[in-house]
Length: 221
Image 1: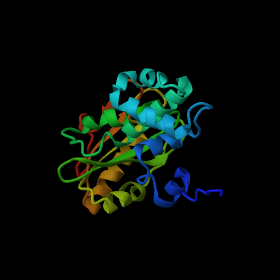
Image 2 (image 1 turned 120 degrees about the vertical axis):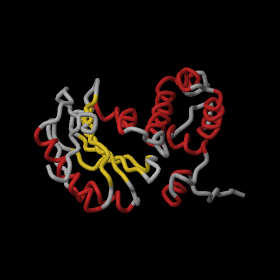
Image 3 (image 1 turned 180 degrees about the horizontal axis):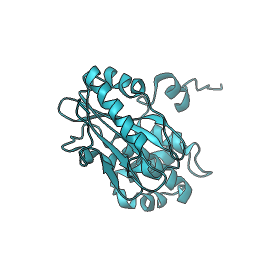
């Protein structure tokens, strides 16, 4: 008698229930895709998860590579997924005591070839709620509208916000357009009741803070 396994596979379950559904081992199965001739993917994923519990961040690739059936490419794929997850979540609930505290959380945007305009929303205790890309521009210009900046912040019930963008040109000095954009956003922030704490410009090596340079304009300017 042939037994048919009607249990949906991991991909089907994730598509149906979302990425919160699978276990750690099943998440690794999604990353690996397949096992090896001698090691089924479920067994390989079990071994990977066990190895991750024993690995430090600095030697995770080396530890994973020691798992039979992994190799360098698979180990790098899992390590890259871990790093991406860390970057996407490390900021959550971090307290911003001064606006430049957000720079480490957005530094990865500084190396991108196009301008990205980033919004960092904060609650009343200045804990980070979310970091999101509001707009992507060209090599030397990004177009932003207050509606794009504040619409999601209102949904998140944010009390304050810091905006930043990268300068692929290699200098973080603000342009005239950057200054005008900041003035516009400050005016809009007063209308919607979400304080704009700073506008930060990033390049590969440094940053420029409008707050630190006294360029957060008063209502009369």
